[in-house]
Amino acid sequence: MSAISTIRNLGPATETQFAKAGITTAEELRTMGADAAYLAWLQAGLPAHFIGYYVLVMALQDRPWNDCKGDEKKALRVRFDAMKAQVAASGHTAREAALNFFGVIAAPKPPRP
Image (tube, rainbow, N blue to C red):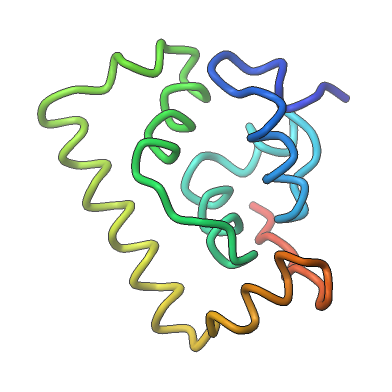
């Protein structure tokens, strides 16, 4: 099994954050795909950041992070906003997210394809 930080554009900080969402290997991240993995990230109470999301998408396509432009970037923004709305509508409260972030409650298991 490979570390998440072995994937282009993803470093140790991203690896640490994904571990909080229950995703610990590069293979697991690739199998899940960017959207499912980022949804798990959000459900774990980790901060939403559009640049982080599209860097992840580019990383899983083995593309430079700054390759995301124009219509592709606009389409990714729509997907990102939909994921944020999904988490907000799920009733996952800010309090639960904070407790999870600090390890007081367990992170939800990410969906498996």
